[in-house]
Image 1 (cartoon, rainbow, N blue to C red):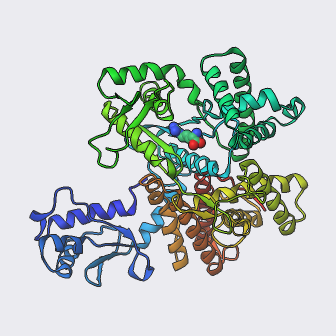
Image 2: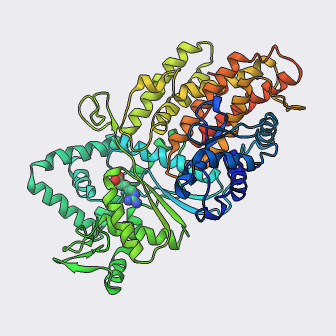
Image 3: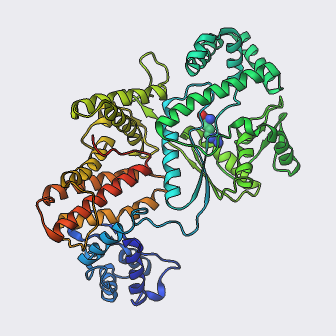
Length: 576
Ligand code: ARG
């Protein structure tokens, strides 16, 4: 598959620039910017290169634009460029370029034009990472859904993405759980529904210890015993972790999320003491008021905020574990990069551990991928009616139940099995899409009616657009079977062909700033572009090469929607 249109236009612009009067003054490595035009009236792409350069070399931008255009050779890619406004250069792709693109996309069903990385990297994606025996709440849904999507995109681009669920299986919550297990456990309830029973224990002890200092101390003592290797406590801990994992697995199965590893915090226990010793020996860490810290004095933001790695009582911390985790990922998993998909409140923690890692000479590309909160309709943190944190499992069940009602109404003649399967796809897809269609830092409002609507920027709308591309072929009575030739006659066809080609521009851009929402926005535009095409161009009643072309556009729209939704972790259905 050829390079993207912006890349091709950039290369041609560079050639033209080298022939202009400013050639000698071009800044080192100058790459002219080329972006899709917002308005088709001005062509398909535009560049502000003349304006940017004119400012730098102090010349008239329109004049420079004229000079660039005179030297520009579109060579069958685009018509002679036009100049607009203060010096924008506008490009319009030729009809045959667009027709070639449709053929190229048809010949590339796996990648649909998306180039694979020339230098594939090994990337560990750290996401979801709930804390064991504590509720996995909707906040974790953001991490789970965003992280899964980023791993899918990275793989599609040819990287080796390793997904690792760094569960919190060694935290202070175990002090409470251990006491609760010994004093409040209902064995029968545990048997029936372990996750709910563990949660009940956790909540009850948590409430009790709030104004009971003695109990707090007792729980702490249980934790110390666990950490010292007490057999009874270790056995209980192991069971808690195992039971919690079973509960989590159910949720991940429903979400279609898989992990290559589940290397939780406890996996690193034995590495913490030697790590701290090494940091002291190498002079990176120092003692401060009995504790061991790393001071990041060179960093203005962190100078006053040392990274604590061993408490004065000898206990290790979240940061210590994360430092050991970086070592493991770099040395054992051979990571070139690690992406941490974790809520924005942990910014300081990651600034600190990245700072320490850098001091230790770690060169892997460590990226914090933060996200904001999910709000209720009242714009406050999402809560249940009783004020508890909303549980992810409950959200997913409700999503599927609500989708079931919609399917029932829309298509009552489907079989019960089909309805159940489609409800799952729509319900889970709606929750995922509500997340991924927002910029991750936005605090978004969780609203069932909006996310399940059949119209608007929602999963049901996009899945339905896919279904419509499929129903054409059902009406036709045959699958798409290729074309002799492509001839784009109507504007709506050309617009759709261009949109389809832009899949190759959008997908790599997602990783620039970890923005799955760019893909969501693209898919929504594709669906609406398809809708316009569908209204303006008769498909089944057309004939010959026109009909073939339109069928090819339907087929490709279906393929791109399916692939794109798949990258978001959203499944499609053939009918709904
Ligand atoms: N368990 C943590 C939490 O729920 C998230 C862990 C994120 N990953 C990491 N390597 N620190 O807040």
